[in-house]
Image (cartoon, rainbow over all chains, first blue to last red; front, side):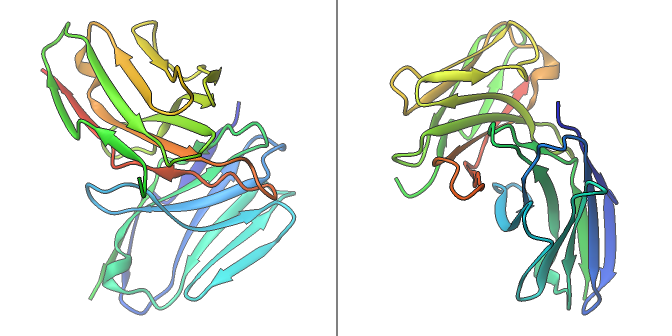
Length: 111
Length: 116
């Protein structure tokens, strides 16, 4: 089955700096890669996603890149703000609806 | 309702007790997923329904775990003879059909289960 690995497990940046979180996946059939943000005690919320026919997608300060050959994808947050502090999860899914999540990255943005 | 609703939000159980966790998906969503999230970890897949059919239960950790969705809407995750290692947040998510290769899952707030 699919195995998703995520790095780093914790990340601390200064407000205004960029943050990058990386994930790798094992199932070459995976074709959908969402990123979720989970604040303490709250539900995971989708922040951006990318399909396998696209190499990059951007939404304001957030961007995701995908390298299908290497089976890795990354989340980039620019101009970080304290409210970006949360746990971020990557995930990978095939057409079989079998989404698997990474272990998460705890991002802390210091004011 | 407007989103995925789970109840109860918190459940404390004595070891050996049976528990039932409920999930109300977004109206009209065909797919429903259960995940187990241990402290500091990502959601771990448990099982998946498409309408009333349980298509994948490969993530259920033991035969003490059972899930059902008899009418293709509300789902119940039942854990029999709870053990301390079952303590976790149980998340439910629902999605509509895969559209243009996307399987967007919307999560409930979860049920935090503590087994004493």
